[in-house]
Length: 131
Image (cartoon, rainbow, N blue to C red; front, side, top):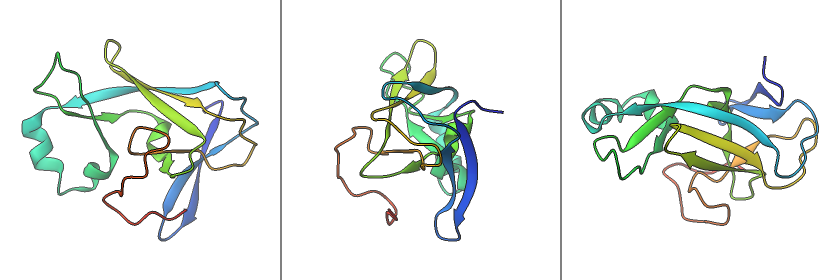
């Protein structure tokens, strides 16, 4: 089981989400998610499947044939918010994504990131945001 994260059903519209199992202090790394790179050719096959919703844009200039990735981690259940309590950073060398708290988080709070990549980016997403 994971030290910081538990997955719960939220609603039919929102599905499942990740929640804090305990209080988390600002700057705590809560997960380091290893990724599987998806070749551009394979991405063209999955963009019409459910896997599309779990892809990250992977901008490693040293591997231009892989522009997307999927994490192998409980962090897949971290939902989007325009008022997130986490951020994520890419580690291209280790092929991983690090998730850390940008503020103190209380036990039971939903864990969220801004899917746009930058905490304050309000650019519309490809789906209707349910806060």
